[in-house]
Amino acid sequence: MNNRENIPLILLHGALGTLEQFNFLIPDLKEHFEVHRLNFEGHGDAGPTDSLFRISYFVENVLGYMDEHEIEQAYFFGYSMGGYVALVLAKDYPERVKRVATLGTIMQWDEAIAERECKYLHPNKIKEKVPHFAKQLKERHLSGWERVVNSTRDMLQYLGVHPEIKSEEWKYINCPLRFHVGDGDTTAGLSETVEIFQKTDNAELMVLPKTDHPISEVDKELLVSSMELFFRELNKPDPNGQAQKKNGSRN
Image 1 (spheres, rainbow, N blue to C red):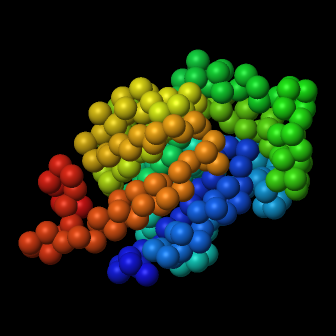
Image 2: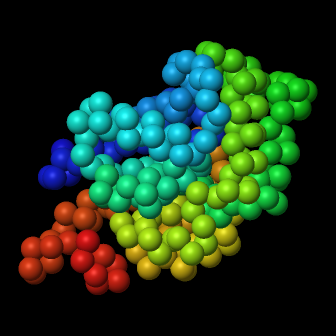
């Protein structure tokens, strides 16, 4: 394993997804990292929950998983919603987060963005417009995919009014960040991702060519290579024996 500090890597899935979204990445990532992944409450085989879906609850899921597995600090890679969960975790619990890489994550939330994202988050619309996706969701979420869709819509509407990271709070995320976004991603948005990249001193940006939002479209070799280099960079000492951020400040 190339990560000589042996810091675990935790993978966080996207909205309507499960930990199985990362199946195609696991063999390659395991060559470099101790890999962990989990289902957020109410997703996949995690069982139903009486609680609402909220980003803050998913952050608690991650902290609970880390405590259960005796992980004091970790690297995080989050796809779409999972990336936002990782960023909120880095803001609110910086001592638990070493570095964060995201893919296709909507960074800024307001009511207009939430309305856009919720437009097709209705079980009947999904069944009518994309029946094959409805079948996938049924197989993916054992406790009822319609509930997951409705709960996700409610969560995004709440997030549009109560974003977990406000515009002025990006400066409080001090760990190194790397934002991956596809040049054809109309969900996360290239220009929107660049806007946050430009206001975050410790962030790096990687634009993936010929790539839309679905994680299934990503170039696996390119993404794994980027993750390996980004997370391992922390272990490259400067002459004084400490790693450096890209802006020259101490990590």
